Image 1 (tube, rainbow, N blue to C red):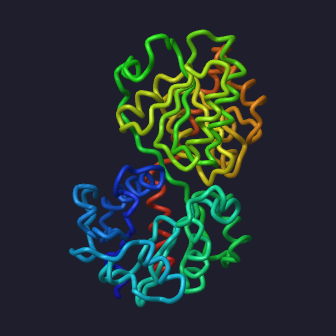
Image 2 (image 1 turned 180 degrees about the vertical axis):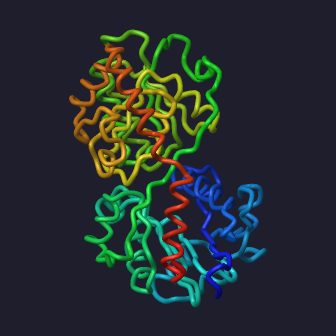
Length: 380
């Protein structure tokens, strides 16, 4: 292959199928930028029963759908096969490629192409009880991929070090590349009003799938400590129900004023933007985090952030957020109360947040990812 030939890259875009969450945002942002690079030929495939058909209408310009046109095997069966052997090969989905990139912990074993696997966090290794059964297999699948020669992309230096230490991956094949955040149009003021009860004059926002590591019960209890001092303040939690919904429901039931906790469930992009833009405070009480796109989105929207000091959050957010110990409801309550009451502190965090958020772009992410692809393919 000549050095001036376009690098053929195929990415697993399965996270775009259905209602995308954080990994879906990663895929969409990265593919959108890679598809504009003239030095690349970019394809996308889906590891699902519907295969290529599942990606119809979901891929950005410059990215071609690849893979079998007809029904395929379920992802769980393929993961079980790849945990045992190097079959079926990635080429069944990727076609001819120089690099195959598994964007969500799993990369199919390839017979000819180089492989890259993204590790967003090591929750399945550290706290398997917080994960669904399918996710608990991820650490072993990453180990198998590394043993077959895969390179590892980690969302942060924190995760990269965990991959080297906990999964014994060769240091030279593990690279930290930060995801970006997508610029969004500023919604008309008052758009979020339609999502709130009529009595709410302001709100604290929590955003994410209701899963154990997101720490929403702690947020509810912290809100309960300050709610009595702030009439008209609501706690709004937006995001799909997950496998910690019962824990959240119990926390709400135990709140001194449960009617002031508003559960919205899944919200679309426009609603999400409006909620982030108009919140008094954005709260991110995660118990473990490999990166943290939502607090950066809040910063970009001009909303002050309170977050836990867990995982990669200090690395990613720096001094642009008020950080509290993970799981400490008293500290979280104190931080929320301070920001609700103190406009000067809010303004200072907003200014630092704007400065911080601009550092995370998909252009930079894609540039660094292309360098990783070239190293993996021996095309540096």
